[in-house]
Length: 222
Length: 92
Image 1 (tube, one colour):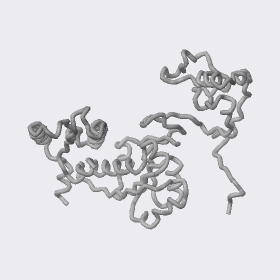
Image 2 (image 1 turned 60 degrees about the horizontal axis):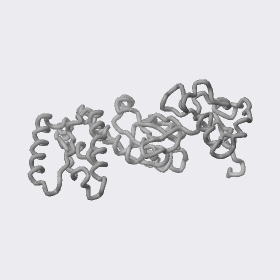
Image 3 (image 1 turned 180 degrees about the horizontal axis):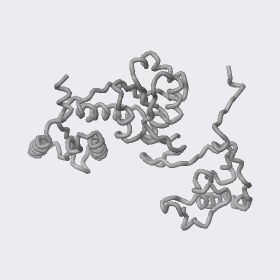
Image 4 (image 1 turned 135 degrees about the vertical axis):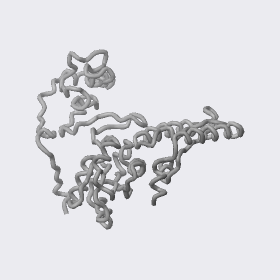
């Protein structure tokens, strides 16, 4: 899922300086899984905002609402009946959701309560790790199910590099060398012949490098 | 829940959990301990101070310990003074 982490309270309070009526929107999907912006985190942040303001003798009204997702209009529409009662929307969704809410409620400032980071997986409760960079041309079949774009610090297509040492990457001794992982897996799968095949230069136009992307399925359009 | 208590103006909160290793629900008291530690960081972040929430361990049979802890926590909170949130709540 998309992994994000909540901004510091100080940063959020700073963004909310001139506002007294806040609509705090959580999201029930990715940010819930990574404990950054789900219903529980909405409750905690709302309490923190009220406590911080009360401590300084100031008022704040925070309405707590967690939507199923903020990347689909049908869910964003659910707050339309009461969005007018608030001065600002503080969203705990990922960057995509925050922007979509801003697009759908153009007259309200929409603020980000989280920093959106990567596409990743849950290794264990409380630990999430990056796995995919959304490059648009998946070669996981050639690399034993391990992505060299996301898991190699240099995104090498034919690794490892000279900085790989004892299975670790030179940029961080806790970081596994992506290519060591690939080689180990190819060995396990009996596919070391694939390692011998040189993967050609990548066409990055399918990635973000080619500009903001859009995907259209004509067969699904109404 | 603990944060809601502070929102309503309480000066301090203490949790009494079973002795470590003797939780009826196996690990409930360990989870509570982690949550209390988390709430402490939140209270520091907010500016109320992590000293206003504490966790104590005791068995249900330790009446004396319960009284001792109640006294200890009361003194601790008295030293910290009333919660600044209370001032606001009383003004309303």
